[in-house]
Length: 253
Ligand code: CMP
Ligand code: CMP
Image (cartoon, rainbow, N blue to C red; front, side):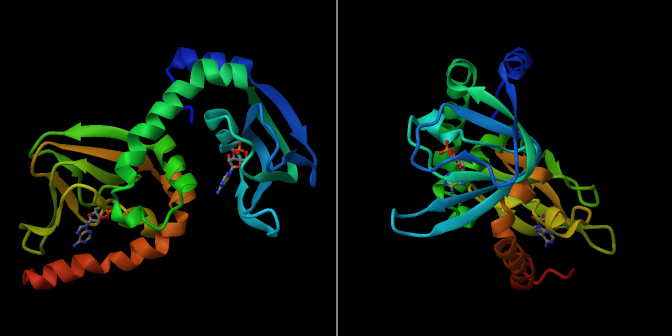
């Protein structure tokens, strides 16, 4: 939400925030009400739930922990609160009001969401996520370009980022026991790489080389764990595509 801000804007936002304390069981946001502030969690835990129809029971969605923010939807889209937030453990949050949000954060946050939403809708592995989960990914994405021949990932390095390929093509390369680098996978737009070291806490299992000029969108380990948690099983299952690719091409590991 705040990543697109420059340091001067961040300072203004921090200065405009007010500390608010919540006790366990206290209601922070009620679904359907008007909302004028968003919150950043400094300490404690807060539960988020939602009624998907007026007659339905509350469905638990997630627990907010320090570093996360909530309550932005009412401000971004001028809509009633889309979910209910109740304090789970004594919490300290910082609130930011609509005036400061509109003035400093809204434009850049909206632009970022609009820019990445179109791209993420085309990424097959993200199909099962809902619009809200995709919007959260948009907030955390950063783009970077590489020239043909550049290495985006080097085998054996420690890995802290997950990549989506926005534009261009790339190859995965792995060193064989004789030291020779072999192509073990090929990527085109809307694919992803760099998931294994985050899922398995292992060094990078291959190198990724740009074969054309490429543009990637990446998120860091923390955001990957927080936002792409629901996809971990799918990503782990998909990893057998590497073995299949190598078998099809007769490449020995
Ligand atoms: P807002 O609608 O302003 O207030 C409720 C908040 O709950 C909402 O902003 C989001 O920050 C948060 N939330 C978390 N998960 C969801 C979800 N799946 N749908 C809607 N809001 C959600
Ligand atoms: P990671 O290990 O984080 O970084 C290198 C990435 O290369 C890896 O995640 C996979 O996304 C990708 N990759 C492609 N082919 C292979 C392969 N045959 N073995 C391991 N990783 C591969």
